[in-house]
Image (cartoon, rainbow, N blue to C red; front, side, top):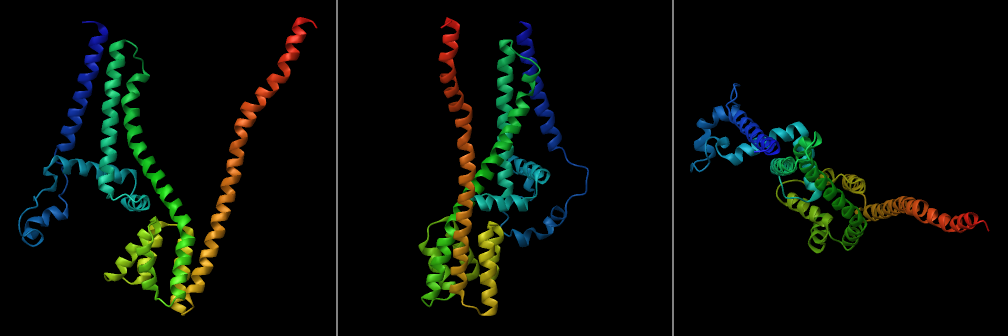
Length: 305
């Protein structure tokens, strides 16, 4: 057995030992007072679960243990409120706990892949100090990669929502001008439309029909989306309802403002794209043109002509 093989076996055994110790420590009971829900669960079991299908201790299964670890990791990385809002903006049907669980599993997968690559590099004899950091780097890349995917999905979906705002507001104004009430107009737009904003309008109409007021449902929708044009439109709409102002005119004005905002954003994006288009011109085309212009003169000077 060579020294490289012994080092590879040592890396594998050390990783397995570290994983076993961490799992054992995480599964040990904590010497703290049990939470209130666990203390009163035996007395409320007949009321909360009369059939007796739910286990008394939610942490008895391995999946519940992983969820608990994911919840603790989520509390350290950020609050569940911001994560729930980001998941809603991205349109993912996930709870913050399930997303943190997926993030934790992605980190474990990256750690496993990094360990396998480290062992392979060590067995080839090309290992160095940076190779030992490969499992940690891949674990962090797996967790941060999933977070970046969520952020990009949320940004892409909110961009689609901003593009739909003027059309939806104009359609609402048209329905109101035809004599429909605000609730009927929102219901018609949510049923006819097939975009991202109409899906949120459909949820707001459903919330208004199941006990919540229409104003509260619209404000909750605007708060969850966090789009400036929708915030302004909802505020103006609520103010018009409270003052008794004509809603169709208010919505037409907000639709015009939303189109102006979209035009301004488009001009800003065009300015940034124009600057980016100059980069290949300055660093690729211009040096090549200078080279073609100067190279014949250099050759002629070398030939002495």
